[in-house]
Image 1 (cartoon, rainbow, N blue to C red):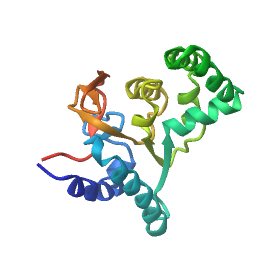
Image 2 (image 1 turned 90 degrees about the vertical axis):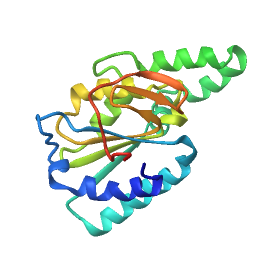
Image 3 (image 1 turned 120 degrees about the vertical axis):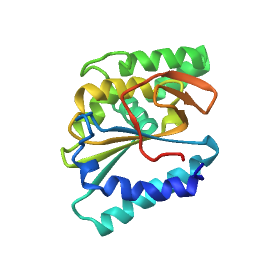
Image 4 (image 1 turned 60 degrees about the horizontal axis):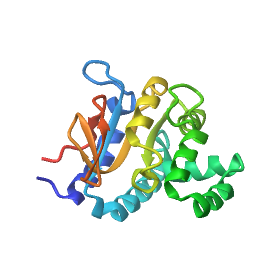
Length: 196
């Protein structure tokens, strides 16, 4: 089994491959990929993603990566809608669980159309020549679930490759956040880098 450094080292070659960027699989599948990793490597993966973007920008002017941190998007959308401070006040009065449900409703996370504020945020800011990196999965749980974002993006982002950085395990059929919490089944993504 490859260690985390070997797997991270293979990402650049994978995403700079022309067929990856053209979003073409063997059966013309939509290019959704997951890079799963042990949660203990979260900071290592964050640093790698940050440095990879800088390196690619410096070396390959024709490759563009757009990173979306789901946690940062959630905060920005709540702030824009005037709900961020209200959420802090609500949490003190009514508890975290109440705020989770209220935030989910505000962001329309269960919606499968343009009402979903997180998905729409990503769609509105993605260009057709970019590679999308989704990060912040662990930071935003349990409010935003990665399978929900992927399912909704799958309907709208079919022309650009998408990579979800997932602190947990993806076995090709289900997501296990932090290797403990079954997120949900998701069958449409490929492993970005093999583990073996």
